[in-house]
Length: 526
Image (cartoon, rainbow, N blue to C red; front, side, top):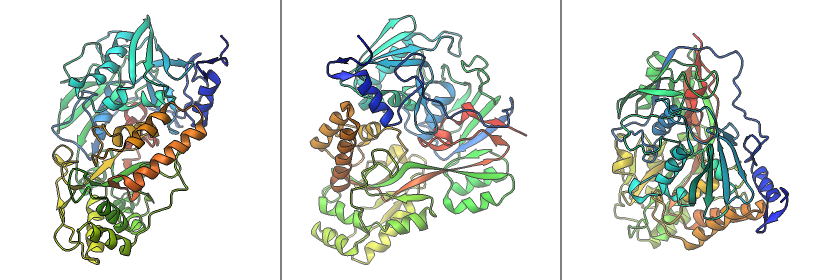
C-alpha cells in the first residue's frame, strides 16, 4: 500500500494535513512526524559544564511526589522532567519533538507504532525496553492507581510490545494529537513494575540525591544521560517558597538563582537590580472563579451569569497583573491559539446585567458563601477583592476566605461552593478540555455535566478535517463560556526571574521555568 492510499477512509496524507495545520509535526527517524526542526538548540555562548543552583518554586507541600501518576503541581512536573523522560517533549512552539521515542508512525491516527531510542538507560543501568513503556502508560488506566491523567489514558485501548525496541499503541478512536499528549508530564516513563516512589529511578538528566516532600529535592547530574553533552549542571536543589516577597528576596540576596510566579508588582524591582532579569512567557495560564454545581446557589445558572458580569476584566488586567495578561472570556482557549474562536462575543463588565441575574438567583442582600482564595492561585485574592467591591454597588454581600497556600489544593480546591483554581497551560485543546471539562474528569472544577460538550470532544478528537475540528472546538468554547460554572477573566503571562549567571533559560508556554523542563537546558556561567 502506498503512503497516500486510503485505508478505512483515512489516508496518511490526511494525517499529515491535520498535524501540519496545527503545527503538530514532530521529528522522528523515518516516522510520520519526521522533518520538524527543534527550536531547543543551545544559544551562544557555548554552555559551560559544572556548577550548582538552587531553585524556588511557589508550590510545595507534604503532598510532593515522585509518582508520575499522582502529581498535579508544577513542582511535581519539574521533578518528573529532572528524573524521568517522556516519549516526546515540547519545544518553544509547543511542537512535539522526539525524546525516548525515536519515531512515531501511523497511517490512521488510531494505531501508532513507537520506535524507542536505543542506548537510553535507567539510573540503575537497566536499558530502556518496551515493557517499561507498556507498564508506564497502562498504570494510568487502572482505577486503583488514581492517576491524575486517567481521563487521557482511557483512550489507550491497547499498548503492547511489538518488537525489541517497538511498542504499538492503539487508541479507542483516532487522535492526531497523540504526540502532544505523550509529552504530558505524568506520561514520563518509569521502570516496569515500579511501585516504590520514595525515590525515582528514571532515564532523566538528573538522579535523585535527596527527596523530602515539602522541604527539598536535590538532583545530581546523570553522566549516562542519553543526550550527548547534557545536562550541564552538577546539581540542582528545588525548594518551595510560597510567599512572593520572600521568593524575590531569596533571589536578590543570592540564596536562590531562579524563581517562578513573580508578582507583576515585583518586576520593576528585579529588572532594576544589576545582574537579575525577568523572563515573560505569554501563555494559556489562568486563574478561574469556580462555582460548584453541587451547591444550590453557586450552581444556579443566573448566579453564574451574574458573577461573570461582575468581572471588570480591563481592571484585572491592568491593576492585578500590571499588563502581563490578556483578557479572557470564561472559556479556556487563549487568544493566539490556533483553535481560538474569535467570533465569540466578549463578555463585558456590566453591573446592570450582574444585578439582574444575581437578583433572579436570590443572591442580593444576605451574605453569600465565602470565596476561597490563596496566593497560590495567581491574583485570586485581588480578584476576589475586586468582585467584593463591585458587588457591593449592587447589593451583593461577597465575603472572602483568604487561605494559606500550604494545603490549599488538597484541602480547599473544588471543595467549597465558591473558590479559585489555577490551571497551567496545556499544549493541546483536547488535553485541556478532557482534563478540566469532560463530565467525568477528576479535575472538572465546577462539577458540570454537559453531554453535548462530551460528544463534541470525542468527535473533534478523531476529526481529520482541520477546519471542521476548529469549528467543533469553537462550539465547545461557546458552550463553556455560556453554560460552564467557571469564570476566566484573564490569561496570565508566566513570569520567572533569575540570576543572569544562569543561562540557557528559554520560553516554553506549557508552563513556568521553560515548561517545567529548565533542568535539562540551563547552565551556570560564573
